Length: 270
Figure 1 (cartoon, rainbow, N blue to C red):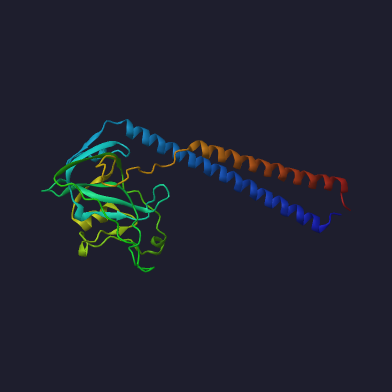
Figure 2 (figure 1 turned 90 degrees about the vertical axis):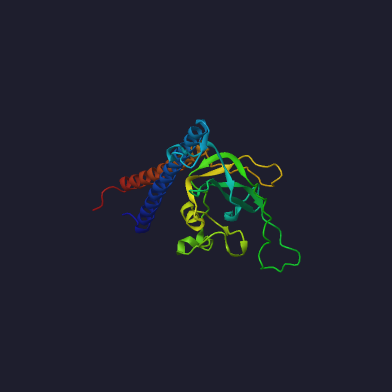
């Protein structure tokens, strides 16, 4: 007669190993999906960069504003509407992205938002007590008169995850109107184009220009982060998870086979 505790252990082992097979296999499938996503991103980057450079104008067709496409815009900087995007690191150093609109048509208030570059977070001012916050960074002056900015297009300002947004409040929201009171440059975590257009009163093109050129002495770094497109790494991880799932499946079969052999040795019970 089979011992009850032996049967319980066998059943528990089969359940645990069966669950392990399903979980490990699902992790492998997830890595394959991540690899497909990265392939799609790589294809979008290559397709955008193969297109001819686009000259942005007030009446440019939005259909041509493909992400990663080289583009150029000529207009007048509007530094009074500048915004600093906080928590943007470069080479491990904390800092900001400086976003400033370039006015393309003064009469229609038509503009394109330009990410001008990265600048480091300022050190605390001498004598500043802890908890009073970092010193405000010194922003480079925007050249006056008609200027031309060259770079690559993006559908939006790249976002950072905001934990507080899960609770329904946004600690980094824009002021209701820009320029801000006192002439201070707002520091925000993320910058949706619709909210920014409402605050400034500008009519923005449905794209963002990540500037690649600029004055050599403006102190801005224009080394924009690139998305990860290493889909081979995901494939490698998927193979590992599937291998672990295969080992768990072999163990499941071994436990089941051992249980069947023990039952056969005991033979039919009266």
